[in-house]
Length: 228
Image (cartoon, rainbow, N blue to C red):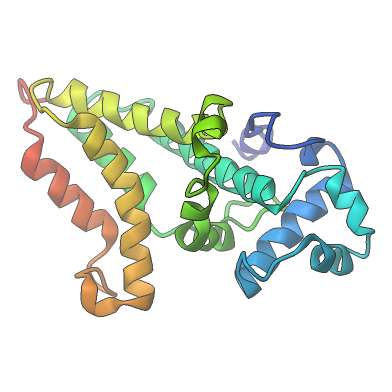
């Protein structure tokens, strides 16, 4: 099983990068250290010059992989959503009960992230923190419509669609499945952010998790058909 997991490769739109960072040791160090540095100093303070100093390589060598740090952020967030997608698909594939399948998917997508040894150069715990704090910066730009057309957000949209299909399969009469699916993903990030920075604005805390919150929301409005 461990070998199978290690053989998994998260496919990223090749328009996001100049050279695939998974293709070389330097590329993997760029990914590994950029995650550590963005977590340490924030995306605004992070630069390719600082990254070059950290990995002891010329700044120009980083530009051979990514056009700019915006594209690097798109890569990191795309990888994160792709990793969650493979975890969700793997965990729910054998579940025939539609309610339990949706519950399992919600749990995978909203639970606190733990380190995955299958990808040694990527710290998923720190990457999840980056997604919570920085993901909106990848799409709140003037170029978002063009980047969407170019497929930069295809993994995220595919993940939302998988959740949408589970909701519709469970309750075909529910009128807002797309909104609910995207709310689960975006809302989970927001609840973790509030829990960390504005605890008075959320009921999620040390005893109540975002998973419990979103599971409650979903099954209050989605009514299983035929005891699904």
